[in-house]
Length: 268
Image (cartoon, rainbow, N blue to C red; front, side, top):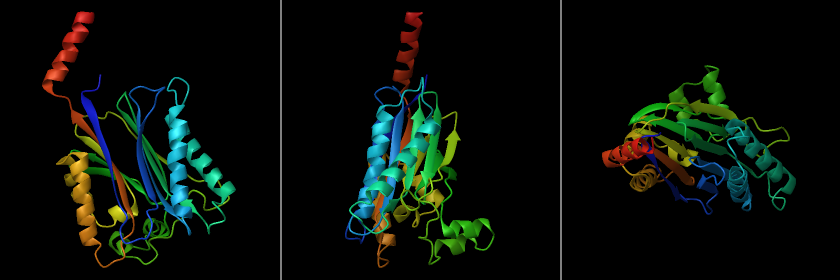
């Protein structure tokens, strides 16, 4: 039995844009007790097309997760299905013929057996922390990241590159099926945490800063702190929408753990 509880929350700021085109949400699954999902999307496209594309990610994820049954369904397959269905809907609808509406996607699913599974498309990221310590983050599907991988650009140069917003993979952006990158971590324990965020957040922080903010605060307080610092650091730079979801695994009080053990012993 897991010796932790889940604390989660979302944060969002419009930045200096006229419209909020990011979306984030947290879900549980009625047919899968103990499972939870965090989902985030960063939409792009004229005349509200980006906002509608991002909203489609949320709607599709919610609908598919509501029907998820761990006895017959696979989490990784579900993540691929969410991406493909969202991509198809965006391409077919065209959202009133808006110019090239498309969106990123990053989704985290926690299972009651202590497994975290995630999938992403585009440059919205998932960060994983162990306590305040950075463990890993997803690799952006972007032109700049490709240059870094090829050794043509350093990591520091990539941060300020003028083509950093060019994506090589996004939902709704091509006729091909989207490429979903999948990650997994087992053996989750109290102190672990996850951050899903759009580039409007991660551009302004180091991994250590993000890990410390999340480890030292409840999700709501961490959200307020990150938004405040983002606004300050982005001042004068035409700040993008900033959206994120925080998921923390928090140790159960000793009383709750002892009660659970006693209850199990009585049952035996």
